[in-house]
Length: 472
Image (tube, rainbow, N blue to C red; front, side):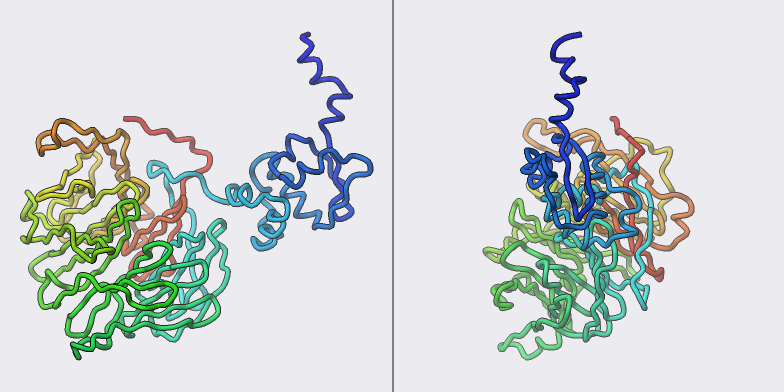
């Protein structure tokens, strides 16, 4: 046996690797390498006689020690301790990131996502609006109340009753403040987890018609400002840029008279931080079919940098009779995605190369598996982490890239290549029967789905044990 191998079995060497700890009067024994991720425990590794005493909860430490050994918490931990208790103890030992990582689901893979649970808020299960916060918690609005769910475990943290009858839009603009709007109540309203923190109204001294305006969409624009789309009863609408610290309007963009389908209020606002652009869209359905628009602004200058109206308008599509049924933007991968109202085809456009007709329509690699598409059916589109999730009626599908985009020649229409995408029907037959999908939103490594007239929202995750790999 080689000398370096023999040291592994030497009792003296093994003894030096082991450390003892006295946690709240209970003795624990582990190894230096196991304790190393904890800077606090690692600093005690040289203390051996007597074992250092640490005046903390030994039962929670037992779970955290298991986390160090296996990178997972024991299954019984969350039944015995609250997330708040675990976070407090893990913070003391310098293990917060390890704890949160162990509680989070694996990376979201649309090829293996599945329905895992439903979240039903207390007292009133119908969710009128929800938002997966960038601050690691989930907001559910229901019957004028806001329920907060902790991100890692999705456990109910608190519920606040607001002064509104119903909430139609909600966004967290900081860990402490959430902003809400209502279809039946004018103004933009800010709440902490304990109470109402203030309200803001769209006012224009030069136009007396601008009053009693309601909020139709909200978007967080980063550290300093957020945006809210307002609409008056007569249809006048605009996007207000609001300073978070002063709650004052610092700019107004995209004002419209609201007297036609091409100037109805913004229904969806999305911020694209990488290029500093704000994307607003609206899609309407009526007796003559679908109509909609997309407008892209630079909030710093207030200028609109691109727009398209369907049908017709400044930018035209090669598919003039196939207007958008819904549209969204991926802020990370920088593309727009829309579904045609007649064909049901998925079109994408590079946000950095928008022109007179930027749309590229993706082909299904397995058309034999395609479900029938009924023109005029309910469609919801949501872009998240390079994937396009589409709700068609009660069905949920995902388009995911399995080969990167290639730039060929000068980027002309005949030479443009988007990459290879694959469509996956992530739902099962029983999922289809739960109701029509009305909203999809991604958060962390989860997907959240709301259905019409169905209580709560659905949580979709990737299986921990599937080991699914995608291939071209």
